[in-house]
Image 1 (cartoon, rainbow, N blue to C red):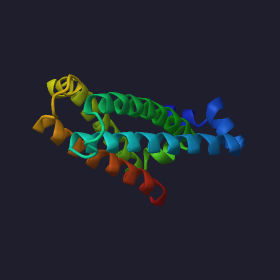
Image 2: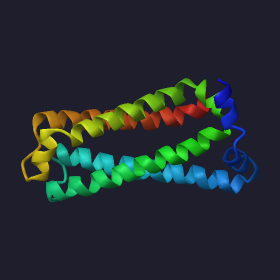
Image 3: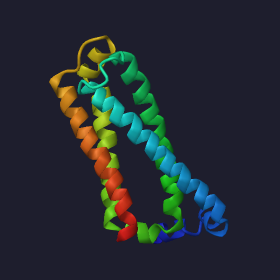
Image 4: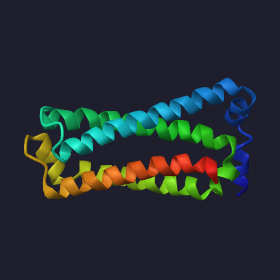
Length: 156
């Protein structure tokens, strides 16, 4: 656990602690990243499930999957900044650990979907397969649960 404690002594962590405006910017950036991630993912998953039929499927999933990937990378980066301020406290927080597990599961689900034949078929103009639809439902559940776990962090 020494390596965790040392994260709180890094230049970045000290700057976030000493200059509250930096912490506020990191926190707001994390929230904006999460909003982009959840927004893109929910619309993408709902489109795969048949909603928003007026949106061309292939182009919609292509664009929204890129937005979600960029938002996830940004959320991880800004989350790491926030984590550095209180690493020992976060590492002992059940809700935080649950959130990390759900984020990992959501990312693995997304990677699995992107490598699937069903995804390639949708990009080529085919309708979503039953497996792709199941993955979309799972994605919705995972990402909403991750947001709920994230909100729960402050209460533990």
